[in-house]
Image (cartoon, rainbow, N blue to C red; front, side, top):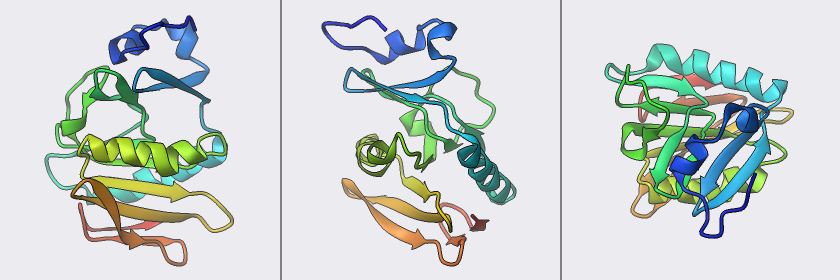
Length: 175
């Protein structure tokens, strides 16, 4: 991808031709591109489990979508593995951070630091109320964080492969 002396914007990334983004995930933080491979099969299976567990428990007026763009600022654009929106049925190329109730990331080998540290901080700055971080492994684990002040605090951790949620909705996620 061609360098941009002043950095990239979310509009620049969204305008990229499909052939440049087809085989890789392209995200943006403060004008800098974050390019990573699309997730593998283990990741996709875990994402399917999350979707199946969350979908029936969603409150009215919300919608769950996997792998969609979220515009966090003019020079910030991320593609969470899964989001829960407060604006069901809206079609757009990028949802606004204010529409996102929960952003979820499944840690991949190539995105460990981004998912655990960078994205958590960026979602907090964008005032997304909940962040779900899922760690694949011999026994998959997950932590749900809630925004309190300027940072997230853990409010639920999985035990024995299950995460019990009381907020932002009630559900048991079997990982």
